[in-house]
Length: 121
Image 1 (cartoon, rainbow, N blue to C red):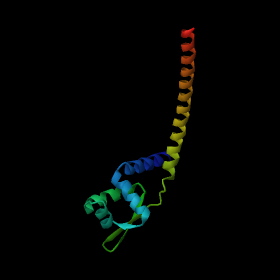
Image 2: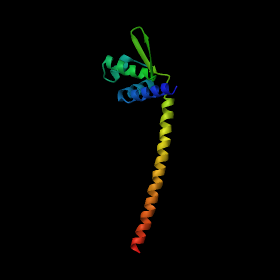
Image 3: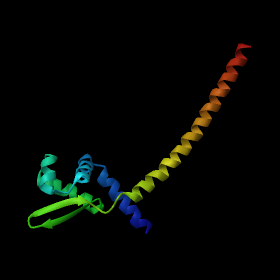
Image 4: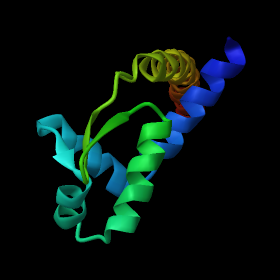
């Protein structure tokens, strides 16, 4: 299960690492679209857009359905919940680390003030 989750999260982040694919997701958030419509919107060839959609589909972020000669894309079932949990875990970790760093900085400032007063006396 852990390996599957790791592979899925890796696929999601790899898919999201490209600006065009993020744009496709934003566009599909507004409504379903054919690969042709997406290619036109992003000024790409059909082949290029098919590759982008394929990456998104493998990550579970997009689902496609072919009716006749038209392949329609829509947002996939993956709502990025696991990815959000992963991000939140690390956000909390870094928040805690920055809080500790703030304490160290405040302590150094306090000592610096005290040392500055001692030198003036």
